[in-house]
Length: 255
Image: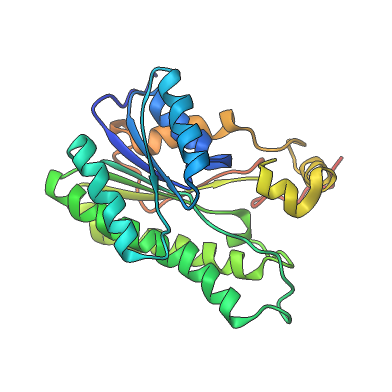
């Protein structure tokens, strides 16, 4: 079954690098017009250029999702560009490492404002448009730390757990409007930020301890992302789909 998204418009937050860039490329390759947002303009421009060179449609929008004004402006610009918003992928997030007893309240609140309040702002702004059209897909990107306890990134795990709860609430309330809301949880991925935090050796070590004994690749999430973003996924809502090599559902001895 081939999933195509021609005629659909998507917003991918944090779409300039890492997993977000992969999500944006996947949606564009399926035919969607993709607006990518983030705090830094340079990687956004490079990402949009790469998508367009591959034959896709992309728009780079600098946006700090801690600001409601910037979020609403980004959504309005997307609507001005393509006339609507059909798909929202809430991917952007921060995970500054810090022991729980050492983290400052200001830093904790910054994580929450970025990782929970930011997706809330985007979801609310986009859902208002989606509800008018009777069709919408909200996909929130979680982390295994939403379900498992990880030291040093307690704030991040707490924020992702909250985002999962918000996803289920959105599904319950927005379903009658033709909008689905689901969570996608990639596993250990060797993104630039993840490697910076855990080192390449750490990523390799964590990956070897999984039942499938390897890190999550961009291709691993493609099919699930497209299903959740499409007509074919119209009866899936409130779900959390873990593409994590068994990380959150098994205990492996690591061979």
